Image 1 (cartoon, rainbow, N blue to C red):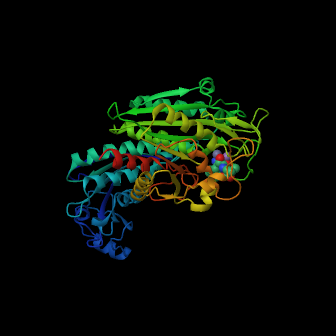
Image 2: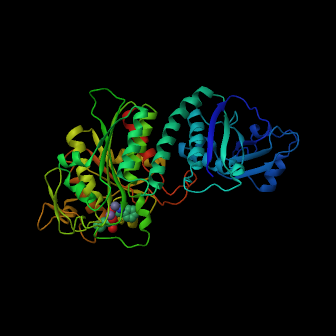
Image 3: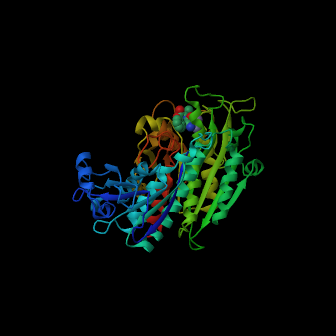
Length: 494
Ligand code: BES
Ligand code: MN
Ligand code: ZN
């Protein structure tokens, strides 16, 4: 059963029972804060027996002696605390979560001498919450659930309580966005179709986001035949959700985020092999990240204008499906020959991008999509592919990626690759053959953005199924929310 973490901050330690955690360092493996829980002075021996030297992420966890105010005492190593980054503090929070699973009450005393600043204390709390995320909606609770699950009250002791609270309010907005994105990706496609996903987007109105849901009829009127063609084989109609957060000046052009939201990708008539196809319930990871980001920006009242647009469709084989060889006219007027119905993401995005540019004339336009298997071949699960027509934008995103550890790696765009998608019968075809599959997909999208500063993040390897980390145990990772929140903050709010 998943554990709900309830975080508060306090200036001093008051504990009776429960788990007491302190952060040790290489300079002082047993910090002063830990000694306060240890009147009998057993920690030095415990630490030496355990071979604990304060190294980063190492832990000692002991049953507290009789005269201690706590039931358990743990020390978590921070190595050289002064050198630690925001993400390092998040990881430390994730590590601490592994100790507190079965506790009901926890005090984390960050000490006086080597205490991290308020921002880093809040990062630690964010790491704790992100690690605690567990998608167990469909698991019937075990009979002994009372003992393993439920709520844990965590009090973080720090000298700057108001600073911590302020910093943590922002982290809560981030945690909310990440958790929303993870939920959307983890949710199975029978439960989350285009209409249901759109309803989730609509819920952001509670946070002050303006949300419009465009139906099939409206999409037809807009002539989004590339997007509509993908949806032909599905019994469930497509939707386009337009989310607007207006936190900036009225005259400021918005930042735009566009997401691929294929709720399930069978490949269509160019059907995928059966093995692993279940993962294609996550083919809306781009749209999930955009929705999560809009949540975060609104929840922390970001001082920017932002638009989030997600194209929601299901790609199914059926008598009504589109075929290889079909030619569709996109909203832009450019025609596309369908070579492979499994290259559907770009068909959804090209209309969403065009619509976005046309209606909002954004300052920058960033799209996220689980677009190609080829990007996983190139970069594995550890970097998202980054493509951009703007060096400044690419650099800013790379920088945000390095800070948040949601890493991106830039791949090239070039006219030589563009030629690979020229078609015999139409303005372009939707696949470019065997080589450079992620690049030709990006070249395709580039034809729909004109000279708007634009970046495409291919998150096929990072949005889902990426390896477990100290801050994520979920299949759907929520990749992109922290990255883009950081990009927005650093580029437009500071
Ligand atoms: N949704 C897939 C890409 C994908 C693959 C995402 C694996 C996550 C994990 C996309 O729609 C797709 O099928 N792409 C094809 C393109 C090809 C037909 C040109 C691919 O990558 O094989
Ligand atoms: Mn596909
Ligand atoms: Zn797809």
